[in-house]
Image 1 (tube, rainbow, N blue to C red):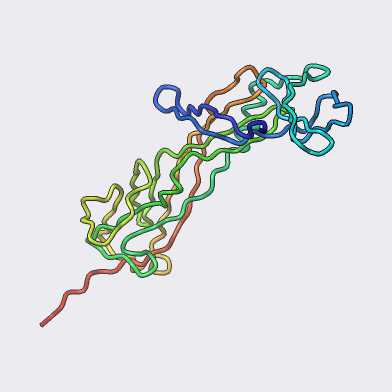
Image 2: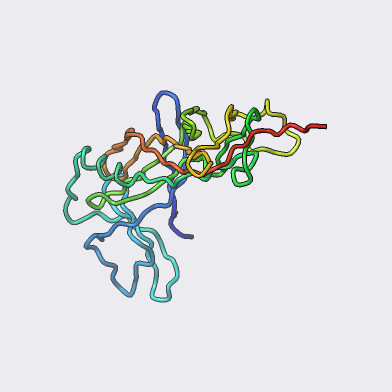
Length: 240
């Protein structure tokens, strides 16, 4: 028997329209309460700060075997940061990764005018990202949830897609794509005779805390972008 090493937290990126429950690892604190075990006993886990301001820790005997889990009170109240301090630190840690762009036809081999180009990001990318930091010794968990993708097609046009787009599968009709674009002119004359395709994902941030009376709330949005370069060619007619 051991103490739990994770905790469920509620992620509300938008309190009106989006809520989900995530399981995140329970972070350790950088400080420890003054209480120490006696009689040959040892602490055999990290100290975890709870929402009530106390700590929990596993207690083991001299042989290293688990005995029980203790709840310990700190020797003096921990100073509490203001919500503005927590939000500023959380916003600074809101750092989801950039996306990886996929197209069909493949952008490396080249695209064609008058032919729909499927656009998508890896399905595994489209998820809520979590980061845990310490603010004045309190646990702050940050969530970044993707919402929309803005695609700049390199020719002055742009489109916005809700969601990551649909990966192309051989045999799929163009009607099944949830994010596509059709070039009307070739990339001849563009820089390097290629168009720069850029995907910019907007993430909505939120945060929860442990030990701060349930302080939680939304954060500002952040964006992450990636680009690829694609030649776009005219379809050559066959003269017979």
